[in-house]
Image (cartoon, rainbow, N blue to C red; front, side, top):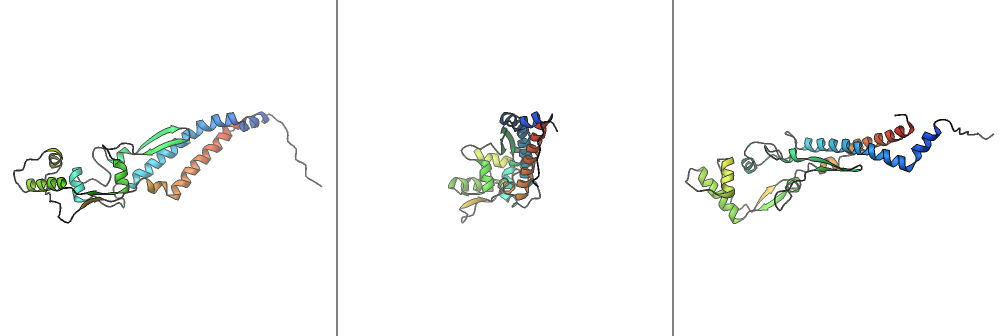
Length: 209
């Protein structure tokens, strides 16, 4: 004997119809998902910052970098406007958020340079600047101007001239953004936040939340 399924239109039928309404679903999902996107974005921001916190595995700052930064700070962390401080969250819409570094320095993207690494070609002007800094740190009465004066104000040496065989100053890659975005555990956590948000949407529409 075939089983019989009976559907009764009780007091919850109207709520069920409302829950299936595309307009109601769109309205409620946008409101809830905007909050979920913000939660996920701030979670990823914390993960990015943890990648560059002191004690992480990224290559340590070179002596020259420490001198330029004016202190023994960790990679990507500065006393003024380091990348750690600059990682920001911008909720752009109910389904879209930006997490990362927006500021640039002049004609180049500073964050991308530090993230991906780069080889900076040594120019004759750079060699001269470091040579004059070296002479000044040896007690010679050398007049420093521009960038050389700025570096000397931060750090009085000892400075060393750039070696004749050194053709580039290399900044190692420190992929603080790519790593968390490619981490399966972080992807699962974010997916869980969205799933919880969508479940909450249906509960709200059904009047059970």
